[in-house]
Amino acid sequence: MNKNLQNISIAGVGESPLGSVPGVNAMELQRAAALAALADAGLSLSDVDGLLTTPVRVEKWAMPVGMVAQGLGIRPGYLATLDVAGASGTAMVHHAAMAVATGQAEAVLCVAGQNQLSSQSRDAAVAQMAGAGWAHPEYEAPYGPLVPTLYALVAQRHMHEYGTTPEQMAEVAAAIRGHAALNPLAHKKAPITVADVLNSKMITTPLHMLDCAIVSDGAAAFVISSRPGLKKRAVKILGQGYGFTHTYIGEHDNIATTGAVQSGRAAFAMAGVKPADIDVAELYDCFTITVIAELEDLGFCPKGEGGRFVEGGRIRLGGALPVTTHGGLLSAVHPGLAGGMFHVVEAVRQLRGEAGARQVPGAELALAHGNGGIIGIHCTLILGKG
Amino acid sequence: MLPPRPQDRFTLPRCEDCGKFHFYPRPVCPHCTGARIAWTEASGRGEVYSHSTVYRAPSPAFKDDLPYVIAIVKTDEGPHLLSRVVGVSPQQVRIGMRLRVRSARKSDDVIRFEFEPEKAK
Image (cartoon, rainbow over all chains, first blue to last red; front, side, top):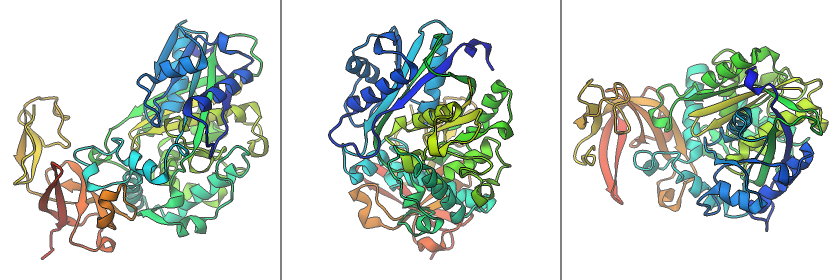
């Protein structure tokens, strides 16, 4: 553990209503999440002296963190809009901890989210994502890839190099849906089987509809603080690391391997623990293949063994390594850039023993992982029971 | 700054300092950070590195093309690039399949170079 982080912890977590939340805008969702996280920490808005958020796609916010500060009625002394795509949720924890470690703030509120589902039609959401620049606007997007196509290319190559099967990918979706079924807040709770995934509509081979993240409304928040005497047992930040390989998948020359190799290696080294020590892994699950690649690249199994690793209930609750226990982006909530924050929220709840029916008994070490772009940027966190 | 991509032949950006090709174009060579880069004629040959058949269009403009094959092409010059594979049924596309540039299509001021199997008639 980095000694600068010794007295810093995740003090509170919270979220807004999740799923389909019509009639509520992005700011209202974020305010609900912020107040929930502050109440969880035993703090109030007047205690917040640092603020981090991510960009919002559904509103024309020229300066997102300014809009959020104004919406909450606060004027923090440290503030920033952070964007490392899907890795933003885990990276926020690190950036907030750095602000606290340098004395810039004592209580940093991280909050983000939007009404990604209710503000637009599904077709509009698909078109918006396809045109958002994940594919190079001039040299990739004109050929017509969906965002899922860019991940499908990863899946196809992974199948070719390692023999990964559609059934193994489907098991990831079924396992994570099983966890969502135990989360009262989750957007999609009806259990699904491997056959259901394989029988769902083919979107872009080899990915079916149920191999892909959902689209939801929702916001999440957490408070990073050095304050003593917090309301609940604080969760420690033991390790973190980043891994960046590319912006556009078309130029990456080894697409079956992700930057989670670098982010995981750095996070485990800082924490001084090994993958086998982790009790619960909140992996970023934008697509089923993402989870399989992360399991390998973070070192939970040898490279190429991710497909076989997920078999036999190993990533389900009760298995050797429960993965994404809140239900993830595949089933619980996916409101855009804020999606990865819910993995952090869940890791904290697991370490506090507050995860209810989906509690991993005796969880003391959790990993939360964020993946951004098309497997191009990663941020891994290792968190410990306070 | 690199001029617009030629439309009449298949070219890739090549660094005049280290001689290597790269893709997509950028201000400096990713191999040596050299800044003398030129669109240079390439063989237009390569192979399928990965592929996906798309069944749902990202926007109405692509609906008439469905289903279509998006592929990452490993060019014989080295760089990978995203394109379409045409002139073959989607089920027959395989990783490692040899490809050649078929044609340049230009619409809305965007040039698209598509690939087809090398052995196609």
